[in-house]
Image 1 (cartoon, rainbow, N blue to C red):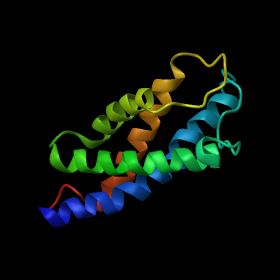
Image 2 (cartoon, one colour; image 1 turned 135 degrees about the horizontal axis):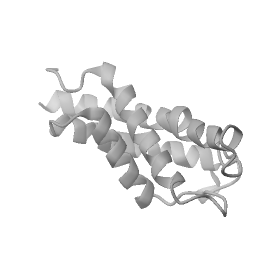
Image 3 (cartoon, rainbow, N blue to C red; image 1 turned 45 degrees about the vertical axis):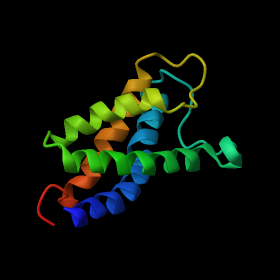
Length: 132
């Protein structure tokens, strides 16, 4: 049991950080370029907290959230992709987002669900549910 929790933490951090780039910011990019519902807010390089670019800041937060999500998926026997999306929506409301003014209200839960689903999707091949 202890080894499987260690694996969940070890693999959850990079999967959560990668999910920010691949799923969260890609969703924002598509909302800007295809749906044209908001100004560009993806892949921000502007300085954010502690002088880090916003993208690096969200990757750090995504890594921490990925660790928590991996532990949750390891300990609770629920469907992983659905739980990832639901926990991602909850995380989107807990973590302050840097979205432009005039962003529709439904964008925040959508990008949270994209991050959570993407993290659970990236964790899926690592077989954290099995013996290990």
